Amino acid sequence: MKVLICGAGSVGRSIASDLIAHGHEVLLMDNQPTAMRVAQVPQAEWMLADGCELAALREAAVEEMDVVVAATGDDKANLVVSFLAKTEFAVPRTVARVNNPRNEWMYDTQWGVDVAVSTPRIMTAMVEEAVSVGDLVKVFTFHQSGASIIEVTLPKTSPVVGALMREIPWPSETVLSCIIRGDRTIAPTPEDTLEAGDELLFIVSAEAEPQALQDVLGSAPGTR
View 1 (cartoon, rainbow, N blue to C red):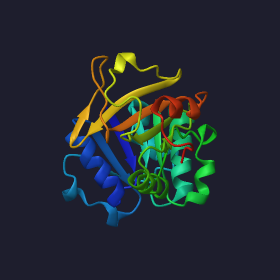
View 2: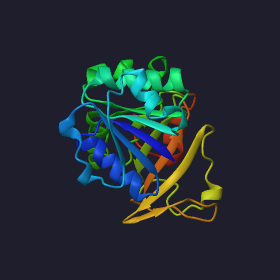
View 3: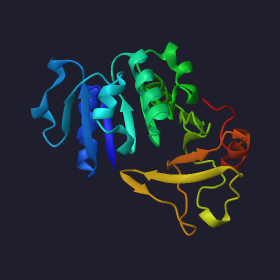
């Protein structure tokens, strides 16, 4: 993919390094000369410009980008970058950093945001996941579709422990996308079985009923 990252601070540089390691092309943009730490991510292209300005985005050929990441420390700037990328350049996917959780309600499709990433919210979800075996934990929500990623650690008492995947009556609008077992990541197949302590990651549509998934897993009531 071709990815533009607006905001070349520590967050933007870290994202760039990871994407480059996975074989993607990355352009890092920032309007602060002090942020031009090219030596730290030498494989990326760098551009000293303001991502909130149309001229800068045109110069960066944003219409050719597959993804635009708004990763600055300013929520207003991240919203403007996402809005321009989506409305002026029809970028297929925008990802925006939420710095202040109180601003999260603005990060929606009206502002051109496909995925909003709020570090405090993700950290809260991870804390809940660490202390609540059997509870469904909403990790984050895709704003465009309303679908969510839900995590649950399978308790020993769950009726699906030892069951074949093909025998489990998963609710509609619910897809098991990944099984994490110890240090292994497993893409589930119909012949796989579930074990106590497995971490399950589900993609759940906005129309799905969490209670239906809880009933199948035999987990405690309540989605956090």
